[in-house]
Amino acid sequence: MTQDGFRPDPASGHAVRRKKPVSHKGLWLKFSATVLVLGIVCVGVYYTIESGYFEVVRVESGSYRFTERADLDNSLSGCLGQNIWTLSEDQVAEKMTALPWVRDLQVLKRLPGTIEVDFREWRPLLVLDSEGENGRALVMVEDGRVLEFPDHLPMAALPVLVGVPCTRDSLQGHLCLDPIWSEGVLSLLEAMAATGLETAGPVDFLVARPEGFAIVLQAGQGRLLVGRENFADRLARYMAARDHLETGLQMDLRFEDRITCSRL
Picture: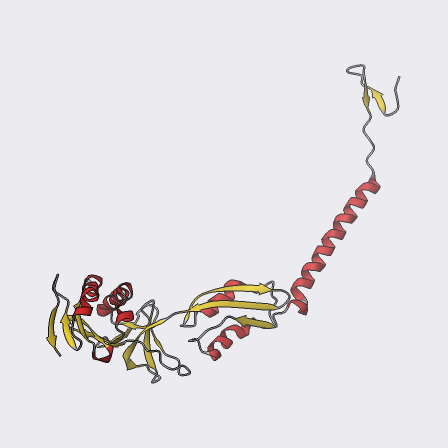
């Protein structure tokens, strides 16, 4: 005997549930729903990519000082009119990092059509006693490169580096200090910052000599001979003794545990 939905199983003699017949109507509904969903997705993707609604119409940047406005506009103008979804942040960053003063940056997208570029600039540390090819003043920045100082800005009150020639990097082609002196200059600047020298007595000149560096202080405060090494120790010795020294002296700090003074 059979019951509703069951059939006899010859092997076991028991009744088992009959398999439900395949519904072609159900399969067709599932297929139609899948096609509909895919169609909606495709239309959405096409609209997102091709619609003018998502074109970049505005490019914003944070505050900046040393970068030329024309150079910045030229680097970012290619973003306008592009689809914000397909425009790569790396593509924008690559153009921006080609600008000499740009240090690091972040690219953000704001829907429907705004790109925001936030970047920091390199800080000038020294003025060189020579001019660039365009007649502009040359400054050394934090990574050791030498850049032309912008014409639209007043020159900052920075120490002037004397006696160190510029050269061009053989790989990247940018200006830099002569490699014989560059490491020493950066080390000396680091020691000046660490000891607080410029806070106590602003510096007019850093002079490179065959025997090493001399620091010329402002307002006739004196001249410090620091040689080629151990800058931090030598400047720390001067800072400890400066209140007991006359102004207008040449102070030789190259000998351990003493300061040799002479009239300029």
